[in-house]
Length: 248
Ligand SMILES: [Zn+2]
Image (cartoon, rainbow, N blue to C red; front, side):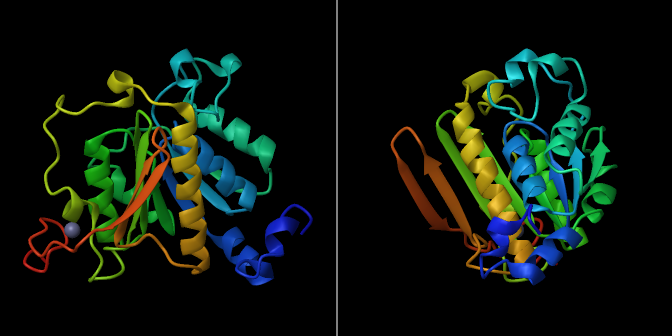
């Protein structure tokens, strides 16, 4: 009670909401720039179960933004490093590492382990995999991406609401490999990943509590360099290769 006192005061949370959070389980894909702040805030808020998927090891160039990790943990798996950080923050929650690549073969079992999925991955392949797996497993998907000084995020409910658009309604075709900039090639400001990752955590907590107005059906575009935020509608694409009525 004391640990969660400041959020128990919120009428949107309260005792019943806190109990709900403690019973909830979130699958977090990626313990990197987005996954770090997302994991910290979910663990701190008492989301009772966190499944953390990442098959990378901590490198020195990660530390500028991936704040779960520390200099003395370079070389460790990111899941081991993340678990150490999150256990120190909140020992009362269940932390489950998944130290394998998210592939066509592993994604379905992984997604089924949670009530909700947060995409903090950095590849288009994984984003499309998760979009499909969440559709099949009927799980909400909190999607986020960053590059440079810009970020975007949304909540996709296509798995639970037939009228809701999905990631592929927004981006029908994956870009050809090598045609898009990544944080590795284009760079990113660490604080921008902090903002988007923390917002993903907040969106996930709202969805688990069933409070407020969600970002479902909207894409939030954040430009930190110019100090601008835009929220644009994502129309349902009737010809979406995944969720369009023609394919259902
Ligand atoms: Zn779709």
